[in-house]
Image (cartoon, rainbow, N blue to C red; front, side, top):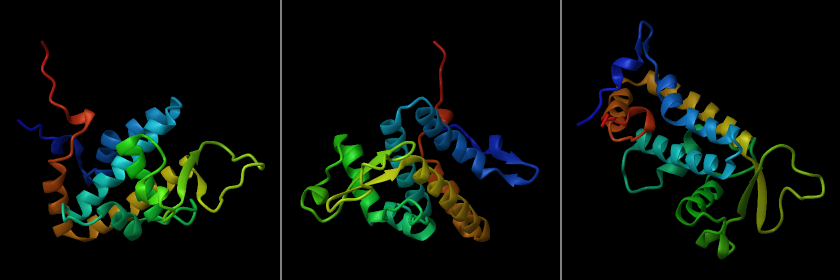
Length: 180
């Protein structure tokens, strides 16, 4: 049985996609971050990007995570690449560490997040690793979501695909609860 979430997000102005994304993804990330569960917030942020890639490109067998980032995000402000974030994502989600196979082989730098201001005695980058500001990444993804939503609003066929694909997204907000 599926829960019809659409009526909750329809307003006089139309479909409120930002509120849907906030309820299903951004609010849980914010709760984790604000309660100093930074690794868990980063893990959920990586899952969010995975979901956005699926919503935009479908299940194509290609790397929709990096494709979505390269299409919609400006990561220069964070100082990371989509490829580095992909390896970071793989490490975090699959092993809860920072060393994917490509990091271990030296093909991609290890990413390490920080919150606040990086101390001056810690270099932001070395030959095999670099630090990035987690909050700056969250802001870059938020800006990328704005770009993505604009592209959806310009293309009715993309909106229809979005609605079809979103039915497969699982979230706490839309779980069907049965009282016992």
